[in-house]
Length: 144
Image (cartoon, rainbow, N blue to C red; front, side, top):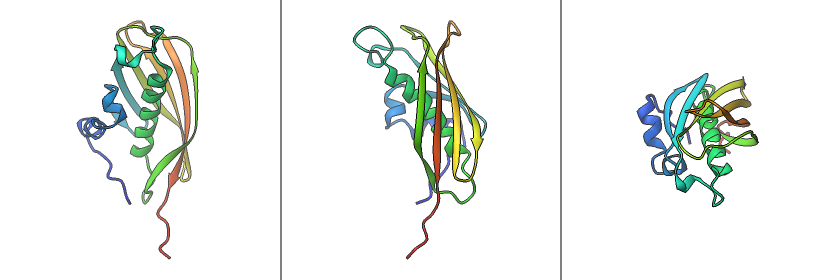
């Protein structure tokens, strides 16, 4: 089943409305083959009970940016992708404001793509996390 690729940022945003990105309030500003930018507003539902931003919300932001970049960069004829590895290193947090993610490709091959993302507290500019993921490119299976 071939996935249709959105063409505008509005289409990318609307595709995620009913899914996890929409539920977390992730808004994309750019989805290009070599740069994806998105952010969310810090809110109670994204926090852990100890008052810090939940690591899962940061990972979801970064993983979604990298995934959208992979989808936008699929080689001709590919059916999709799946994440095979992800690594997150946390350096800080945010308790209010906005969290911004910028994802860029490190490698875009026919069988794998590797994307890096940097997550920052938008108002302070402080880096909160570094993220890397490896995506396996999915190809149509021959009919038997």
